[in-house]
Length: 230
Length: 229
Image (cartoon, rainbow over all chains, first blue to last red; front, top):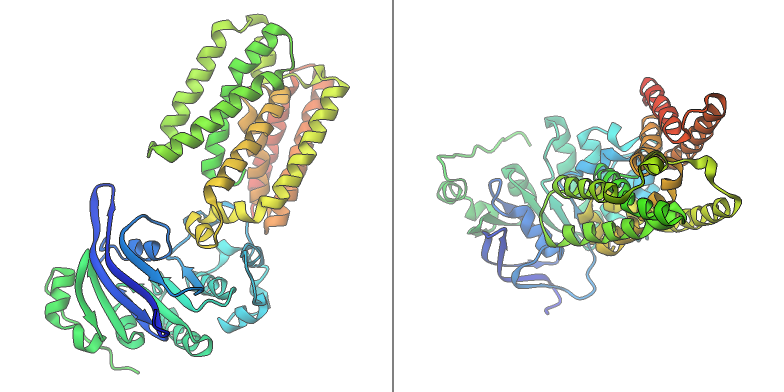
């Protein structure tokens, strides 16, 4: 594998419960990339992430660079409310921590006050930042991020965007973001794959996200207005 | 007992003990020993079924517990039914107590070791797997531990109430805890208090100790609702 190449996916096909979820998907991930996987709900984006992590069966080839450390930030953790867990407790569950919890927490914008707080008392924005911090604990090179903006209010969105950008710079991360948010795609990715069971488009966002391709992807009349507030 | 799904498993496991207890009573040996093989059989069946089928836990548990009760009553001597159904801790002897304590201590030791992995598995099997935790293996270990605990618990509260013995103190502790250590210690202490309370009330009133223990733990639970953090 070339030095720069982190991931190679070839003809990935996934069938679950007799339903074809992903069909003949191929793409590559290079070091330093931020690739967005864009698509409507049910398009197979989370399934794709799970296959990349080896959590689901698939046909085709998925080849990661040898020795690469991958971390996963899931969309939500529905069962976390079942057990009384403080933030510190949650971090203690990480199997492999080459980082100190304090440093990572500061990096995502938390202070010591949060360590003793119960996990279910965090706002959704804080919860997501905690998941990001958790995923950084073992110094990963690649971050697989499922829906970074779900459930965060408008004020919080800016923080997650900035966080992603600063993380990328500081930690030299390669990122794969699953999203249905075009803002994230335009502002933070250098490459986008539009997925609706099959690859509808692939390439740099500005080239590839035309009204035609968005129509194909979302199946409806859709125009996108870019907010010019930055 | 950590999560809702696991608690649901404990209920029918308790009922599964009944054929074993019946056999034990008929042939005059220790109830826990009689219960154990059936519980282990139940554990393995549930584990295999979960692996092989997509059947919801609810169907499996309904089938399992109904069968257990039915089979037991085919040959349970009716005058000994009370001990089988609701247990009788007062008939225990020193040897049995020592063995139970030894087993309990060993289990605590094992639980302490696997605890972080188990909590993570309960929060998210995906996260656990991406941490290279062998989820299937730990689920099996966990189920075995529950089986042993249920078998031991049979002596105290009988077959029907074993789920309550483990689940209710944990539920109370969950209401009162702000972190994991408080939860673990809290459940244990509340469990112990419930048992002492139930036996104490038995000494006072002569009513069966098993149900009294459960009622004490339920009262504590209701109290915990007021102080819910």
